[in-house]
Structure formats: C-alpha cells, structure tokens
Amino acid sequence: MRILTLLAALLFSGATLAQKATPIRFALDWRFEGPAAPYFVAIDKGYYKAEGLDVTVDPGTGSVEGINRVASGAYEMGFADFNSLVKYRDNPRNLAVKGVMMVYDTPAFSIVALKKSGIKSPRDLEGKILGAPAPDGAYAQWPIFVKANNIDAAKVRIENVGFPVREPMLAQGKVDAITGFWFSSYMNLRANNVPADDIVVLHMRDHGVDLYGNVIIANPDFMRFSPKAVAGFVKATIKGIQETIRNPDTAIDSLMKRNPIAKREVELERLKLALSKNFVTPDVQKNGLGAVDMKRLEKSFEQIGLTFQYTSKPKAADVFTSQYLPAREHRLVK
Image (tube, rainbow, N blue to C red; front, side):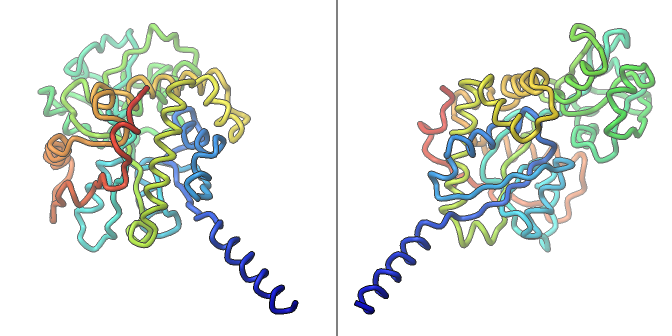
C-alpha cells in the first residue's frame, strides 16, 4: 500500500508539473489605455491560458523602454517601436532581441495642429513653432518627414516640451503644432476642451514616412528555450485583437478593470481610432494580422538611416521573424 501511495503521489506530482503554465511578463509601451485592450481581452477570454501561458502585463513609459526591459531579461516579451529596435540592433554587442509580430502596420507617428494655425500640409509648418518632446518616437522621424516633404527645417522652430504639457501647450497656443502618437494627442486635446473639428492630424505615413510602427518583441533566450510559448503568445494575442475588432465596446471593459480611474468613453474612442488607422490597414486586410512585407521593411531601413548613422546595419531578417506567426487564415480580420 505504501508503494502504491508513493506511485500515486509521483503520478499526481508529474501531472501537476505538466499542467504548470509558462509565465510571461509582458512590458507595454505606455499606460493602460484603449489600444492595450487586446492583451487584457486575451487574458479575460482565456486565450493565453489555453496556450499554457500565465501572462502578466505591466505599463511602460515610452515606446523605446520596452526594448531594454526585454533585453535585460526582466521581461520575456514586450511592445516597442520597431524603428528603435532597428537602431538597437545596429550595435552587434546588443542582444538579438527580435520582433515576432507586427501590431501597428501603420505607425501612430503624426504632426498635430489646430485649424487656427493655418497648418493644412507639411510645408505649412515653415515659420511655425513645433512642440516636440526630445524622446518622442514621432519626433524621431522628423528628418524623414522633412526630406519626404521638402520642408526647409531651418524655418521651423523646435520647442523641446515635456509629455505632460505637450497637448495643453498646443491648446493654449504656446506652440503651433506638436509631434506625437495621433490617437493619444487627439484624445488629450479633446480632454483640454478642444473641439474635434478644430484638430488637424498629419499622419506621417500619409506623407512619405513609410515605416512600420510598434511590434511585439521577444528576448532571444526565451525564443530559444521556449519557442512554443512565444508562438502561443502570438496566437493568443492575435485572437485578442480579432475579438477587440469585432466588439470594441465589450473589449474596453477588460481594460477598465485594470484602470478604473480612466474614463470609459475616452478610452473606447482612443481604441477605435487606433484600430481604424494603425491595427487594421489595407495590407492587414489582405495579408492578416502580425505579418510584414519584407521589401517594405528593407526600404524602411533606408529611411531610418536618415535619422541615425548606421555602424553595423542589420538585415531585415535579423530584426523580425515570422516563424512564430500562425497560418494566414488564422490571422485574417473578420
């Protein structure tokens, strides 16, 4: 009986270990706002759990920070600006962090102004004051925007402003335009009592900046030793995005559970703006969520070179891999 009891205990212990979920710490690029809803939907719907994963999501303070958090091993996976990842990988001493799923097929980079400024096109920025936080991801693309639109940069005065005061300064007329992620700046201006009809958004992608946006990245050791977990995270996240696209009004509830002080109507609108312009594009509708066009990706490296002096320029395949993506039919937007 003692032997049988011991065997039963060992079998039970083995079964428990087999069922133990793989923990994944996921670093967001920003606060718990509308565009982060798909990850929480995937948690609440049990999509990650179905893949044998125990996922925790932490907020961030910028679209570059996630790269260092993942490279350090503090987080297995994260959400970061792809173009900053390219610059990071230019240094061969840096860890081989890679993008494994493109989320913002179109980047949120933009120039935002008010109608009273008279800014309707890129060249209208000449003679104006542009408010731009130095570490802002959108401002980092300014040299590309300038070249693509033949702007005389010497005629644009750049004012280094902090993130918290960027939109208030625009609303108060202290600057004529700002750089930023368009859906955040748009909603922040609305919160500063600026009517929607008074807001002018120049999406950089619509004006010659042919870059990708934010991407899900993974630590190289985690990719090496836990490839099934990486693939499972990607698969479940895609399901979370698909569900969010189908029903954003319900998806936002998953976000509100984690950020109860947020205003539901504000975050719902922010989410819908991001879905319409950044998550779902003609390329995504054709090729499915998560994928990239490698030719477009390689071309983007050339534009990135306008903002950064390469020393050991990486190849596209060094920075992004599609090996963890499920088949196209499972990635389509329905």
